[in-house]
Amino acid sequence: MLLDPLLPEVAFVGRSNVGKSTLLNALAGRRIAKISGTPGKTRALNVFLIEESHYFLDLPGYGYARVGKVQRAAFRGLVKHTLRRDQLRGVVWLLDIRHPLSADDQSMQDTLAEEEKTRVLAALTKGDKLSSGKRSTRERELREELGLPEDQVVVTSAKTGAGIADLKEAIAGLISGATQ
Figure 1 (cartoon, rainbow, N blue to C red):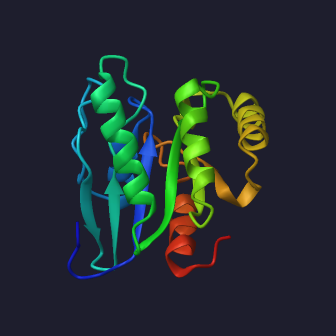
Figure 2: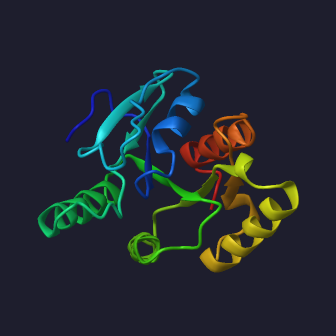
């Protein structure tokens, strides 16, 4: 798929029900992504033009149990294709801060690691659901497990707005090429 005009792209990926649509809306400052109470509703790559300067690529959520083998294979193909796009500047990988990495998360980590040129930001969602102390502990644990430096992990809460400005700044770094 060729987007016109050619602009930098940032892909968003995460498990079903991780809060991807809600976070996209918080980052855009308006409703761009449809929020559903039912996980696994996004089945295609959705593209959003942001501030006439870049695109957000919203990939379908992974790990939804009711998806068959054919759909899982199609999803893997879509992810790999997206990670190889010429205009892609990085990936925002959403993880629910409350939960340990699942087998699907670990599979995604392997996929992201295969594409060495792809820069990754981990957005830990639903930070408002934990106490401050537990939130800090989980952030450190996940950062260590993911092997990412502190500046590539951002705790967010679309509900309270916490971390949204930090994530916007980190995404701007991806787009400008400032983040390693």
